[in-house]
Image (cartoon, rainbow, N blue to C red):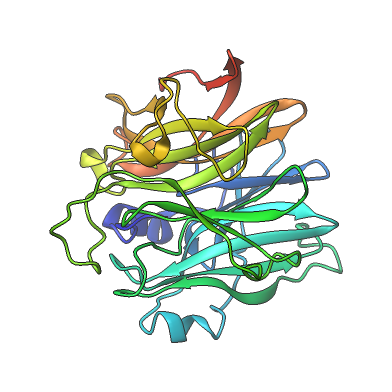
Length: 327
């Protein structure tokens, strides 16, 4: 999720969205899972906003994950308003793991939590989201990273890793325990992408190294790290763009097409905004019915800069992801 996530344009979603079938729902930071014949989309919003679809084209809003925020959240973010950021969804051994972010606006007063369920179908008798508490937490003036924007990836040995982060000193990856609920012992941390930060800033300042939202996707011989450069949530001033690097090991180093390390500011462009979309970013990637898709949001220049869902099929050229430009 974003440092500027509380922008007015995003709040408009919660005030004016209508619960009916729509092709481009107002969405921030989407992730998707499929169970049976239904796609389930989860995104930033009160209690974690959700939608369902049968075809990846028409979406209907569903109930949020949380009716009330978990009790522990107030201890991390005392003035928390129920607005939960940037979920991540995956299925492992019959359990759905949904990681999510809570944060104070513009600070790394943040934590990543985990909630689990055995089904995504709300009509199933076993449907019940169970909160598992904090996985990691960042604290201002202690940590030079931000515990938001989680993404779970399992390496070739089945070891779980959590990628996350925004701004400060870059994006991180930490090894998780086999239960996926806590950091593994002994701890193993990596920086997987970073940009230069103004050295004169105080540690509590998010800074100007604008990158966030890592998503790791394994394809063939490589792990691909997708991430967002520049700024979201600014309506017509949004400059978001999606870039990528790849590595043969999950912890990196991730290199772009020019062999520049993402830890040295590298990143090959995947997609950016245009006259109709002010910025495009914070993506996820999934394979459905043998096809790879990226899900992201963009700021609609023809609708007051509101964030809208964008779905694009990925094609692969010389083992690099490509998508069609924005219309």
